[in-house]
Amino acid sequence: MTKDQLKSLARRPRCPRCDFDKTIGNALCRRCRTKLPAQMRAGLEGIPSKDTWIVTRALRAAANYFDVHFASVRRFGGGRRRH
Image (tube, rainbow, N blue to C red):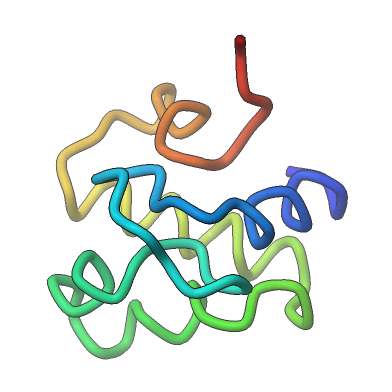
């Protein structure tokens, strides 16, 4: 992931996993973040101020936790959106 991809993920108003509204600056909505173990949440909150590598690793861990194949992380929120 690039820094620009992180910024677009942070600005997105909807959660890429469930399409509920999310707080701007986080990767997932509050509901999806609460389903994750506590140690996994920190990497997905306040993502514009974090290192790209940390957020990418947290997205990979969350995708694995939710049984989403990492190749699908683009749809999960880690890559470019297709229209």
